[in-house]
Amino acid sequence: MSTPVNLFDYESLARERLSEMAYGYIASGAADEITLRRNRECFDLIRLKPRVLVDVSQVDTRLELLGQTLDFPILLAPCAYHKLFHPEGEVATAHGAEIAGAVFVVGTFSTVAIEEIAQSTAARLWFQLYVNPDRGFTQEMVERAEAAGCQALCITVDTPILGTRDREKRSGFHLPAGMERANLKQLGAETSRAQHHGQGAYSLLDAALTWDKVDSIRSFTKLPVILKGILAPEDARLAVEHGISGILVSNHGGRNLDTVPAAIEALPDVVEAVQGRCPVLLDGGIRRGTDIVKALALGAKAILIGRPYLWGLAADGAEGIARVIQILRAELEAAMRLCGAPRLNQINRNLLWPDR
Ligand SMILES: Cc1cc2nc3c(=O)[nH]c(=O)nc-3n(C[C@H](O)[C@H](O)[C@H](O)COP(=O)(O)O)c2cc1C
Image 1 (tube, rainbow, N blue to C red):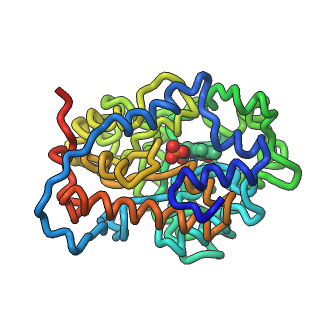
Image 2 (image 1 turned 60 degrees about the vertical axis):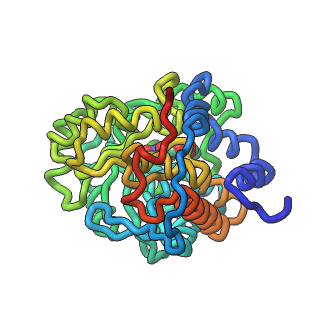
């Protein structure tokens, strides 16, 4: 293929370069993949309403998020097992994030330990927490992430168990020899290398995770806590009541519970419930700069991408990730200019074509 010009080109390159199992792991959604498809379809159906004759010679995508200044509202979502896609794994991802100036949310299930990733990079890191059934270990892991310099803690709350992933089962998904969940090494190989559809998976995720445990994590960390995987406005309201610093509206990229709405469909009610009391982020299906404008118009403060940067990682390592972010950022700037909204605070519902 000639030089990739958009994120879908990177998907094609990743498909060519990866084994069926590794590509299938990225691509897969839960069950019939209805939500997976819907994440994309809903973005396609929203139409923009541009305004003209606005001075768009300067465009500004900077924002303040949880006390941090970001150059643009695109972050890298936590995804497991980067060594499946590149021999350097999360070290390459962090390098790509650093080149592009993006925040990288490192996953609990990274194949390189959080300390090693942090030492390798100047990129801004956040840490995604899968709460472990072992409370002491969970606390240790949070403290390690904090000591390594992570600047926010993103607790994934939509995964008491893994979703039904037919595609992964068919391709015989497994962690290849030499790969492990490096942050879980202290729990022994039975856990750090447990096959995630097997019995061992029960030692990876706390199926009894409830609000009181979230409170207890908040009590021992100084980091701002974001809850990842909220769809119901009722849960968004509870999150605010529990003093959460941010909410990430997400259906886990359509990988957990099939037939839930697209993340972009769930966003407006969550934003309404939160009433500006904490920032609301969104992930799921973002592939174009116009998708970002739509998410921001519906009240998201920033968005995250998952699969697209894994495609970049598989296609061209750190450089591929940096390019994916640069392409998306350039598309966002172009969309803002063409919409007549050169600053993020000018992006609102008036930029969406009304449904009649
Ligand atoms: C291969 C893969 C692995 C993932 N692993 C995790 C994970 O370990 N923890 C987590 O909270 N979310 C995980 N996710 C979900 C992402 O954080 C994110 O919610 C999703 O990918 C966003 O949708 P998108 O891929 O359409 O951008 C994973 C997603 C993918 C594609």
